[in-house]
Length: 76
Image (tube, rainbow, N blue to C red; front, side):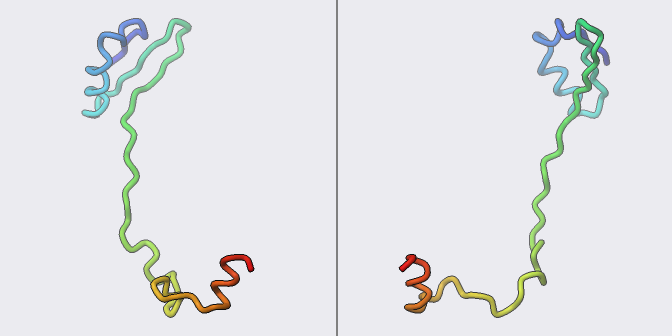
């Protein structure tokens, strides 16, 4: 589908629907520039991406800090 940029104001929702359904939508500007409307895929979240990359026995963030760690943290 090819559409002049001047026609996109009234047809924008239809053009978006067409692009989302896989139709090729090209908007032609006054200078002849062509722009293709394509849906952008959302990044997928991958659960467990760091599994096996964090060494076991790391710091336990739920345990209280030692006095020395607390002094370092507070900048004393």
